[in-house]
Image (cartoon, rainbow, N blue to C red; front, top):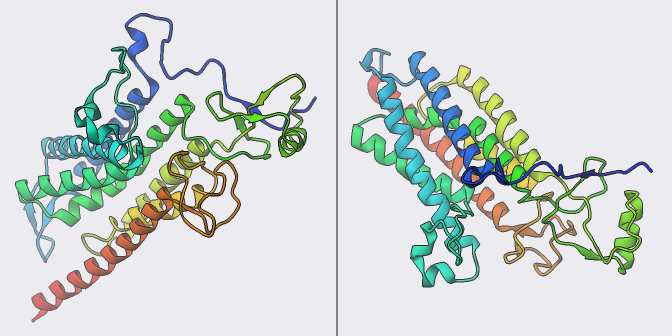
Length: 334
């Protein structure tokens, strides 16, 4: 039989070594964070060596040389604020149980009720974006560095690192997409199952040549949306920004393209990714529609609303940076 779907690899587990004591505490997701931050560090270090981060005057004269220690301090501060923002946003915005409001100390408590180590499960990208931004603004103000210049640099470093974060989601078998009949659709073990007695489930299974005889609950193939995000919000966005840097006209020229590019890519991919079950759709003609299938392009998820705000913010930032730079030039000429 020609199966028109892919089974999630059985050898992939959230833990790197699931059957080895102590080492089973090491999770792919945590390791991907390390890869992400390391990648960002290498990119920033390359920019530093190229002189991209050196502060210069109106006539391109060197005002302040940037060192690798400065880069490390900048990135470390951003990472701390990023983790704080990602975790707080995830627990207080995306979690609807209300437990974290009642017991806020659980936000950074890495154990479950049975005292089993779980790590900090649940991170919000948008929360990390906001937290990291505040951290970098704080660092620039404290060290008296040009904010827009450093935001341009971090915009070039984030996307490629972000790729690893989405790969971590894939290894965890989480944040999967909606059901699909495309041949690369994947059956994720943790995905919600459907009753095999339902007519549309039988028809759907037949379309992908899935044998459901004798099965009570069926796990249907879904879009591997984590891979979509890793490719488009990570690799492709990074390549685009890396080339845009060659046309930089002023400080703040590159940074706005990151939220615009990410927002556009994520907004589209959200149509293939299944929204959180407890949140569903926030805006649309039928916010009570089932989430496992796209029934209307007008039904928008929380992620899409936040992405729309990112796009608007990015456009506003670019216009603001352009006008500010034009004004500065006018002042110097007069």
